[in-house]
Length: 158
Image 1 (tube, one colour):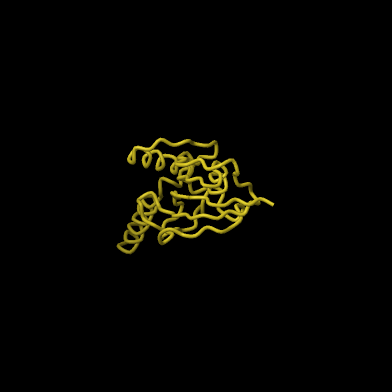
Image 2 (cartoon, rainbow, N blue to C red):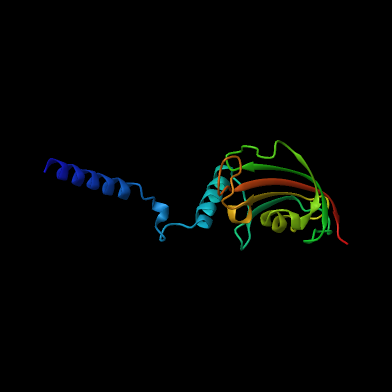
């Protein structure tokens, strides 16, 4: 009888712990990752007193210098510099980096954002995770919202 009560106790505890360990994000009626990202971006914008333009994809940007009329297209070769941060300001690119690549080789948020400036342009991009690296970790953080600073010196389109 004592053994039977012991097993019942173990089963009850297992059930209670199982219920308690369920995460709220397992609930399909909870916020999506895109909604979470937008909440984080809005808080970042408020905390840093920024005024951004938001695209239909959820990308936010600030043009610091529009550059000339030579805007990159998807197959354009672009040269310049960039720096990337997380929303908390931690640098994940180890400072300013040289940019020499085709636009199509960048993450979707950069592809979209850089099309808004031309040669000589400077832009700040605030990129939700679905336009960045998704659930792949950046500096140990999955679903990271990224902040990029770009200066484009050259745009060459064949």
